[in-house]
Length: 478
Ligand SMILES: Cc1cc2nc3c(=O)[nH]c(=O)nc-3n(C[C@H](O)[C@H](O)[C@H](O)COP(=O)(O)OP(=O)(O)OC[C@H]3O[C@@H](n4cnc5c(N)ncnc54)[C@H](O)[C@@H]3O)c2cc1C
Ligand code: SF4
Image (tube, rainbow, N blue to C red; front, side, top):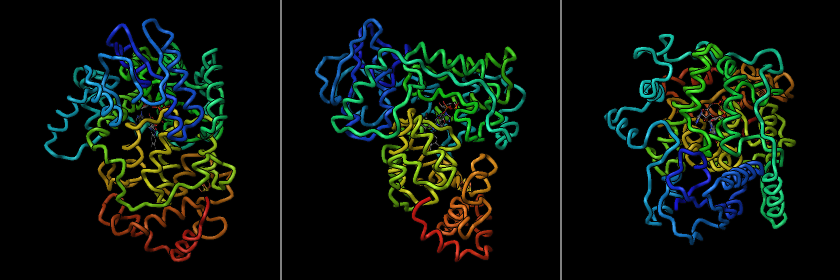
């Protein structure tokens, strides 16, 4: 009998006819999960348990497993790998990614100690998979269409693409909701609001969501990939990270569906390339870096950032936040357990880095509050890319940005009580002032990095720097 984990729910994880699928409620007692994330996990497990040959068991902890199992696909976290090692069963190599762990180890060895670069990894993945390749050359003779993508936020409040696929709840969801209500009544606390299930909980739903995205929304993925509109929560993003990370979809099948849309003239090349880059490039890359950087990477804190996460982040309480960009982002997380890449990186990550929030705490908060959050996906994205807490192992410079960037890429500033151009005084934008405060705090480190040294020189010329630093040292709440 094969032991199956909750992120191995698709057909490509099945090794044996008989499957043992644990539902582990104890996990919700240890950490404060978003209510909709807890719902999605339980709903997906119970939908998989409808398949023949699958036996669902309820456990408080994996350590309570008493049924004999014979095989397992290697799980996705250090903790679970320690657990399966202790079982003495046949462990098959991990699945659900384009590159195997052995192939990535060979790739790293081939670099002979040189810095790993995502772009280089991505091009290798393109050649390996033949996706968007033409006689050994990239389709359109370019590997990267970023210059066609990443446009600023458009003037309209909504992109105007079709609504994303969302789930229609069934009897299983009714039961899950009742069980979670019961847990809450017993004292288990969740973050965020309960709401209709938005994300797929079965293979069938995941395929529907994938086809819907590819047919109706992929074409506009590229141009506004980095823009944020307050009245358009999904923009042209796929919302497929949750079903991918639960193993309901394989990244290659999603990438192939996107490539077909391009071949058949239903989606432009820049969008399809941008999307495939995320899937076979970034997603695989951060997975392999989780193992490559090691278990302790998540505890890196090179910038000595030791501020605790504020209460309104922990409670997802948008009402007590004034900065419109942060308020809307926290509100969106509370409503759905999901925001797209730019609010994660340039609003949450940027503000957390500016304010010196502790990286490990930020990492764990993100894992618990995003429906797609997992132990493997977060460290490179949070500790590395967003917070620069690894001192540059992942990104060559901190992704620090001021109010001007937020004003260009989002439509939040127009209705904010602060002004993105103002540094000091009542209207001073905390993201703008926070940026200069960050540059000032870390100037010794940043001045030796040619990619950011100009910011240090500009900061040193600011006539109101002392006032700004004093103001930011007093700021208690954004
Ligand atoms: C601070 C921070 C936290 C993040 N947390 C998560 C997370 O919990 N789970 C998660 O899967 N991704 C995470 N990401 C990466 C990315 O933001 C999400 O994958 C994406 O926003 C999910 O929405 P989507 O499915 O609509 O993605 P799309 O924009 O449609 O992109 C397509 C797919 O590419 C993959 N992808 C794109 N970028 C990344 C990346 N940097 N790392 C891993 N996969 C990527 C995802 O599988 C995604 O579904 C995080 C990024 C940052 C900066
Ligand atoms: S003005 Fe500043 S705080 Fe307000 S939305 Fe813009 S960037 Fe955010």
